[in-house]
Amino acid sequence: MIKVEVVFALPDKQTVLLADVPEGTSAEQVVMQSGILDKCPEIDPTNLTLGIWNRTCKLHQVVKEGDRVEIYRPLIADPKEARRRRADKAKEEGRANKITGGRPLKSGE
Image 1 (cartoon, rainbow, N blue to C red):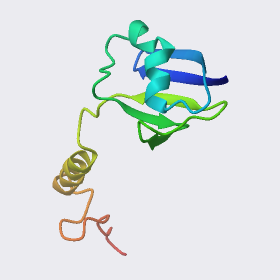
Image 2 (tube, rainbow, N blue to C red):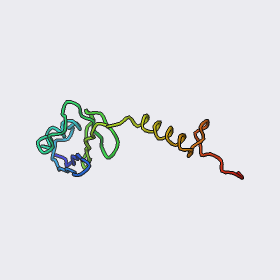
Image 3 (cartoon, helix red, strand yellow):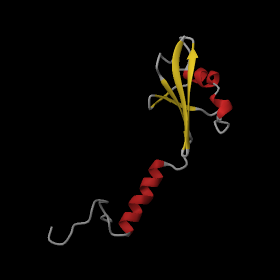
């Protein structure tokens, strides 16, 4: 048996469980066996995105002693689209050059 952590975090609360699982257990199996689904009903077991130590992994990746299996929440916004909106706003406000997107030159530069 090996010891692993299973972690799920919300903006206001974090759940961390220790699990003893047999060697050769996959990340998905760890989540299912840990009991975290009972403690955190907001987790959708049919649509899991997992990571080990802050790196996404496949559901079938085998865990090792001491691994930290993290359950990721779905993104609420597309990161590329959010950055595009911030850049457009900066251009409108004059904080960025309208053509290059870089900082505008100050007088005398």
